[in-house]
Every structure is written in structure tokens, then in C-alpha cells.
Amino acid sequence: MEPTKTMWKMAVKTTWVVALALAAPAALAQEGGAEEWHYAGALTGTPQYPEGFAHFDYVNVDAPKGGELRMPGIGTFDSLNPIPYGGNKATGLALVFETLMTPSQDEINAQYGLLAEAFRYPDDYSEVTYRLRPEAKFSDGMPVTAEDVVFSFDSFKTLNATYANYYRHVTSAEVTGEREVTFHFDEKGNRELPQIVGQLMVLPKHWFEGDTPHDVSASTLEKIVGSGPYKIGEINPGSSITYTLDDDYWGKDLGVNVGRNNFGSIKYLYYSDFDVAFVGFRAHDFDFWIETKAKRWATEYEFPAAKDGSVKREAVPNPLRSTGIMQALVPNNRRAPFNDERVREALIYALDFETINKTQLNDAYSRDNSFWFGTDLASAGLPEGEELDILQSVKDEVPAEIFDEPNTLPVAGTPEKFRDNLRHAFELLKEAGFERRGTQMVDVKTGKPFTFEILLDNPSLQTVVLPYVEDLRKIGIEASIRLVDSSQYQNRVNDFDYDMIWELWAQSLSPGNEQFNYWGSRSVDQPGSQNYAGISDPGIDALIEKVVFADDRDTLVAATKALDRVLLAHNFIIPLYYSTDYRIAYWNTIAHPAEFPEYGLDFPDAWWSTEAE
Image (cartoon, rainbow, N blue to C red; front, side):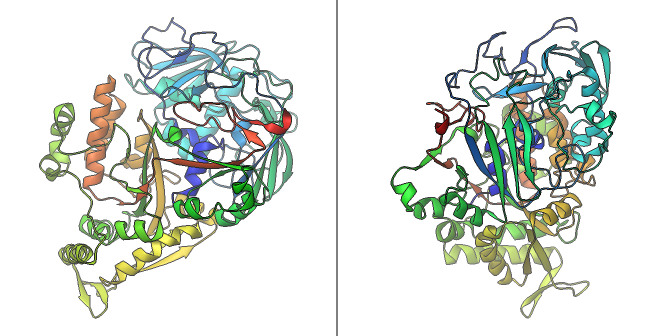
């Protein structure tokens, strides 16, 4: 099974945080001084679509408007305010709150103007100015202003740890014209910074600071007005939320929106877990399902609606083409004994992936052997060319073996091979100061048994974790599983209150500043960061800098491979698995264009209700 929460995030508009993980901004393709305005930015060359384009090529411009899309949410929600750190944000808020720019899904990290009609920056990338569209407005009729942009930036950076880290090098935002906002940076030459601020979600200052003020730092279930195609409709706290199409949406005729935003309403129904939700899907309580269990995909679609064609199934690669996936069990390196690299390596040798894949996962997955698994950014073999040059430049700060030994994961699948792996794990633990006493592995100095807790919020993950726990017991390590609800899990993860968790990083093909949030020393103690492993390493910090300041695509690829290689060499995580197929099922009450975009499903934006025809 694949990580259900993240796969749903990859397909469904949820909150702005998704963009930080899946749409890391591209380097600006256009070169020019501060006087040159750009309508779009792309990775290389020029954007695919010309200025003033009519619509994206992959949409159905004749798609009907109306009908209802019903979707599952997992857990609960207690806030409609996307700004503050913490809390459970309602799924689907990105339908309501827009960003300055928006991506195209048939290009790698191309962005086109949405709330902003253009942007400009100087040759040294020390700042960027965005110019808002004069017609942009919120659903209450108030215009979207430069003051709203500054208010949103200041609020996100001040009140949300994730955004504080992501916008670390954005020192300030100021109104510099009637419809212009300038963002200032504390470093020059970072080609990514002008575009990451283009991903800023804009909220209404007047709603928070008007005649009836609202606390921007607090969770709320009051309906905040947005500028997007949908408005917040009916709310059943913790149970369901409905978004309704705004007939007066200001941007409906923009090229980035034509043929999109077709459903008359989008409703999220909340379930306790994904297995319960699948029962709801079979009963047609909702319309769309991402299948994360290979065994269920192979054996549990024999229900009548699937047999008669009312439920359609497709396995497509599109959403994964632009994303490098690392799914792993993640020990918290902030805690002993996980701060010992030999211990971490032993934990890798104790996982018999091949047997788990065969017996539990229908033999449907490949082992994750890179933090950019399945992409051209994945390291392989021995370093050479520019990658080797980059590694040589930080030679004293990275493991010496990376120059002579390729990164490989242990292979088991037979009793003989796995015994050899466990024997090697035992030797590593012995080197780290542990010994076997009776049935327990204990610390020689303290006599304390090696025990730890694996924190999960999805019961279906136990299918994989339980066999691992049993294998650890064979070498005297006692691991227990703690299953908690999604809210408690997120709170504990935000505070790094765990021994080991199951997590996933979904990497863009244009990595940049978000890498500091994943593995940089600056984020290791920052609550809410995605530095789940607790990495603080000068060599990795130096390689992240190489990635962020890469001048061209070739250097970016080489620097990313170098970073990937060193992350793997330190054995920070226990790599699991992923699939190159994205499995979806949906009822015939909804439909999609004839061809998906190259790098996504554009769901739900480009889909429509067949009942609206």
C-alpha cells in the first residue's frame, strides 16, 4: 500500500501546503532587468503557452457546468483559516483562496498569472514585483489589493512555521504601486525566490481587520471570503464541508480557467480511516477514489458497480512523471540511539522488503532507492562528471565511501539472504555498543534494552509494519506500534515527539529552497518542519546551497544527485517502496477530458459532472 494521505494530496486540491511539496517553483526562464514584465515563468526556454492564450490544451472547453462532486476527507477538521500553524484545516480550501500564479500540468513547473497579471525582477534576483489584475476581486465584491498580498505574506510568515521556513530568504513585502507588491530577498542570485512568492495564497485583509475583526492567528469555522472559483457553503463541523461554484467568479474567462472549475458544488465527507472510506466509495457515497492498496486493486473490485461499468478504473503514470517519491520509515535522529549511523544501518538490514512485497503487497511495488525515485534526478552508480566535481568541493564534509561505493540497499526474499542481513545488522549494533543478553538487545554501558515506538495514524500501514516488528524481535529489538488519530499524529509530528514514523517526501523535478525544510540544519528544531529525520549536517547544508544556487539545468541535476547520494549514504531513513502507476477509480457520474495532461490529472479542476449534461 502506498501512503494514502499523500497520494490524495497529489490529486485533490486541498490546502496551499500541498504546493510546497509537489510544485516547488522552477528557475525563471526569462532573463531581463527590472523593467521587463513577464506573464509566466518556466523551467527552460519559454513557457509553452503564449501571452493571452485561450485555454490549456488538455481541457474540454465544452465541459458542462453544474452537478456535484463528492469526495472523502479523513479524520476531522476544526478550521477554515489556512494561515495559523497547527489545527486541522478543512480539505479543499485551495478552491476558495487563490495564489498570485498558477501552474500548467502539461509542463514541468511552468507558472502563469492568476491574481497577478505580470511580474518583474532585476538581473541579480534581489527582489520581485508582482502586478495584480485590476479585475481580481473577492466573492464579497471587494477588490484584491496589494495590501491583501502584504497582509497575507506577513501573516503566513509570522504565524506558520512551515511558511516561515519556506520564505526564510524573503525579508519583506511592501506596496510599491496601486496594484504592485515588491518582495525583498536577503540574498542575491537565487533564481527560485521570485517564483516561490508567486505561490503565495492571498486572503482578505478587510475580513480580518474590518468592522467585525477576526483573529488571523486563530482557528475558525466562520466562512472566510476568498477570490477563488468556489465559496464555502454548508459546514457540518468535523463531518462534512461543501464548496459552491461562484457564478460571479471574476476569473472564469482567464485562459488558465477556461474549461475548468466545472462542478456546481464539491462536498467532502469525513471518514475515520481509508478502509471505512472505501466502503463508502463502493456504496457511492462519493465519486472518486485513489487506490493505494495493490492487493485491493487486484482482488476487491468485483462488486456489481465495478462489474457493470458504473465504476471505472484507470492506472496512469501522469501524476508521477514529475514527482520523485521517497516513502520511508523515519527514525528520529534527535534521539539516541538513532543518532548513531550504525544503528540506523542495522535497522535497514532488518527489513525484508522482498518478502513483505510478495506476501503483503501483491508483489506490486519497487524499492525506493532514491529521494527522487523514478526521475532523472536520482543518483546511481558512482559519481561522475559535474556531480563528482560538486562532491569533491565538499569532500571533507561527506562520507568518504560515496566516491568508491555505490549506494545499495540490502536484498532478502529468502531465509538464507535474510539471515545474512540480520547477521550484518547484529554486527553493526555490536559496533554501536549493544549486545544480546538473552532475548534482548541492550546498551552495554547502561544495560537498557533497545526498545522504541513506531507512531502511525493509518491502521492499514500495520500490514507492513507488523512483519518488520517481528523481524526486529529476532535480533532482540522490541518495537511497538502506537496508532493515534490524525490530529494527535500531526501534533506529535509537528513537535518531533516520536521515535519512528512512516512518512513520505514528494519531490519536484526542480528542487530548491524547500530542501532546507526537509534536511537543512536550520529546520532541525523548527516545529512543523518536514525535517522528520532530524538531520543537521554541514555537508548536506552545503549541497542544498549547491542545489538552490544552480545556474542551469545541468548543474541543478548534478547537485541534486550529489545531495541524494549523501542523504542515502548517511542511512537517515529506512526506504520502503512505491509504484509508477497511479490507480484511480470513479463513478460514471463524473468524467474527464479525453487525454490527461502530461504531468497530472488536473483533478478536480478539468473534470465535470455527467449529470450536468
